[in-house]
Amino acid sequence: FITTPACCPSRASFLAGGFYPFNTNVLANNPPLGGATRFYDKNSLVTQLQQDGYKTALIGKYLNQYKEIEPYIPPGWTNFIGTDRHVNWYDYEIVRGSSTYNEPSEGIISREEKYITDFIKEESINFIKLQGNQKFFLYITPPAPHAPATPAEGDEALFSDYVYDSPNLPGDKEIVYPYYFEEDGEEEGGDDVPMEEFIRNQLRSLQAVD
Image (cartoon, rainbow, N blue to C red; front, side, top):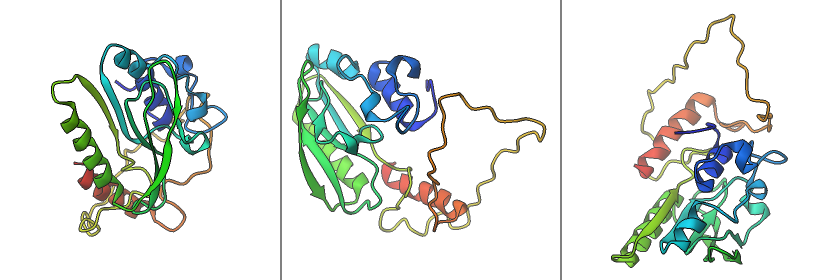
């Protein structure tokens, strides 16, 4: 169940334990109404689970604008391998560390050069294998199909004939967005990628996720 179908508000609502954006304080993807700096992380789904004896892990994207606070590790993560939005999915930085349910910490920034979806998969499998009979919570958050939606090697030519047919809206109806949605000036497909090709790349990038 998605309370608000936008990236950062939806992630924050989930991590908060199912609350609405007006409860989490994260109303949009980017500042001033959104982003990682707005999220109250002291009492969350993972702090409660860790306090109850779970091993907790985040592997992948944390929240929008995480780069503004990295290498900060939020409370409650036994294993945090976090990242933010990257242009290059074959060369990027990650923050690795751990924290307790009542105390944040500072992680270590390192560089990875493996296709990001494959990196997330391998780290996730490693975490699971280490748990044995221990109860755990694993939050896997690949960046795909966010822009730039880079396909994995071998998937670049898939769906070459696919054409997205957007739903037709009645001509006399105006789309009304919630008050907290602001224009952030970002074009999903980028200036040099036509929208139809970007959508194909989104489908391609999801093959590695699947």
